[in-house]
Amino acid sequence: MLVLGYCTCAIAQATLKSHKIAYNVLENREGDDYEVYAMNPDGTGKTNVTRHPDVAWTYYAHKNKLYWISDRDTCHRCYYLYVSDAEGNGVKKVSGLRLEDSWMSSRKKGRELIVAGRIGKQARYQLFLVNTASGQYEQITHDTSAMYADPEFSPNGKQIVYRYKHKRLDRNEKAEIWIADADGSNARQLTTYPAADTTAQWHSYHAGPPQWNAKLSLITYQSKQNGKYRLMAVSPDGKHNFELFDFPFSAGWHDWSPDGRWLAVELFPDESSPGDIYLWDYQTKALTRLTDGPGFEQSPVWVRR
Image 1 (cartoon, one colour):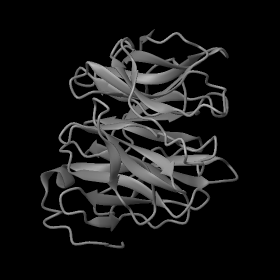
Image 2 (cartoon, one colour):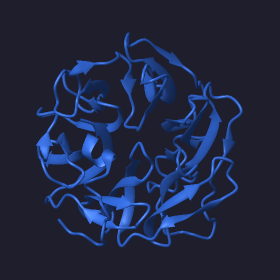
Image 3 (tube, helix red, strand yellow):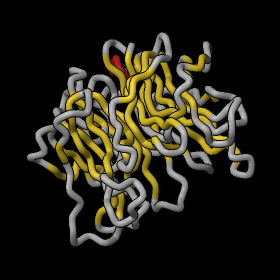
Image 4 (cartoon, one colour):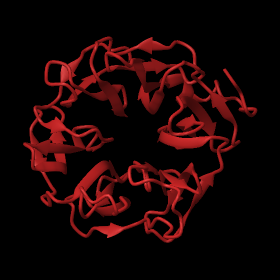
């Protein structure tokens, strides 16, 4: 474990004691086997949560419920939503709605999820509300030419932020972060990629999955700028947009701890190189490396023990 700073009383923090960090691992490239792992916030106790030769990716947890998409029991890379605890116990399929490869969020004490889903071949990357108890769902966006992805509820559940493109298949259009009321109305754009920056390819994140930090009143996202993925931040009113911190490597998918202090973040040398999960203390700026596996270790998520 590489420590790039001194983290004062880190293990003594209540959040670190009560939570684990789940993340995705490429277990077998030839078999296209991705597993979800979980570990302690100091990098110890790494365990395989999903234990299945499928494509399984986690993108969200609510308290002790870890949500992950999987193509088990269906066609290859046809994703449906499952839930378990941080040890992989109590696996349950949540809904019959087919999902996109996307982050998600919840409100109403975890009773309602917002996800990016699809119906058939035409209704791709639309936003749906899913009842986590019954699995019933309601579609809230209906522009099938557009792309809605990686939705995140505001802390009070009244708004959503998400990645958006007017034309989903247009490689010249850059996806940006938008904010809207929870029913999709009153949408407005929060980010604008620098017009002079040509270092990001069409498939790169110009504005990556948003994460809303209630304590800091900031929405963070990754963006490839000046040849490097950077962790950017924008205020909910869109008036302030800046680089949150200059990490030593490119910064990718990330998740804030419930208390808003700790950032679990994937850092990687370049887009073709495996990444590792790091823990960053917003208060002290201490950075600790948690994983050192040979494969890709990505998309950390905080989950209660």
